[in-house]
Image (cartoon, one colour):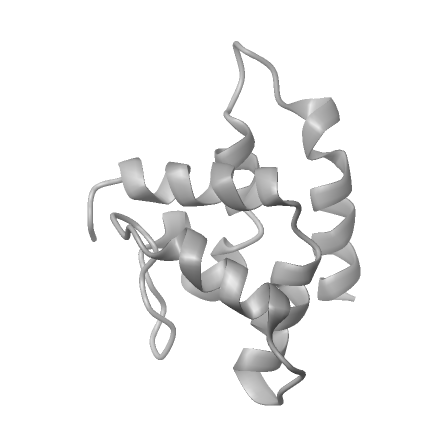
Length: 100
């Protein structure tokens, strides 16, 4: 169920984001909060996302990775649902945030 709601969120991001509202990256990041904590601050054992400059590379690697199990499996599925533009927007959003 959580995967379906995440995919629905990703599908509707373009329709919701505008110049005066939250950025596409911020809207996409709301799907990350479920596991990575409020505002991507981290929720052990999952790492914080704020202030990181490697998000783009990590998501791109998961997008092309072979299937796996556990948490990695979830991230592979999440990354595959993202367009390259989504990945760029997420990475830019988190890179601009202060580290936790």
